[in-house]
Amino acid sequence: MHFQALKELLDSLSTTPRAALYRSGRTVYLVSAPQKPQLEGWSYCGEVWTDARGRAVAALPPFAHNHRAGFHYELTPVGTECAARVVEEIENGRFAVETDEPHVKVAWRVTPLRETSDSQHE
Image 1 (tube, rainbow, N blue to C red):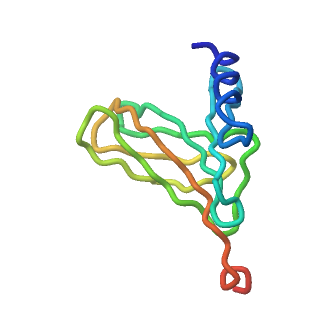
Image 2 (image 1 turned 135 degrees about the vertical axis):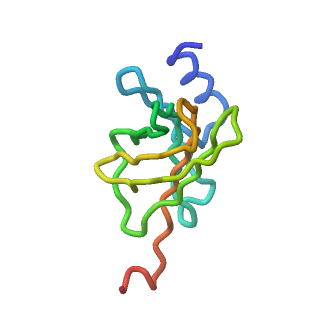
């Protein structure tokens, strides 16, 4: 399915946007909106393939920015039982992952953490 067809389908699902598609070059990003924006953060998700050393760099959408409270990372290796972990946290819109095996597809989701009143005063 082409990018424009995906975008039109997503737009037709609801009058209140819950997610949006963005394209930057050959990469398509799905950004999901929370149902309660005042309580939950946005999520950015995508997929990367690790190299021969089991490492990959995931890029966030160009409009994503750092959050003072940090991020929650979810990594899921696809088609294998190996482990995946974040080895470099988000900096300049990118983060690095590593798997126990080489050439593994890793699905990822990054969600900004909510800032609490305690975290704002530290």
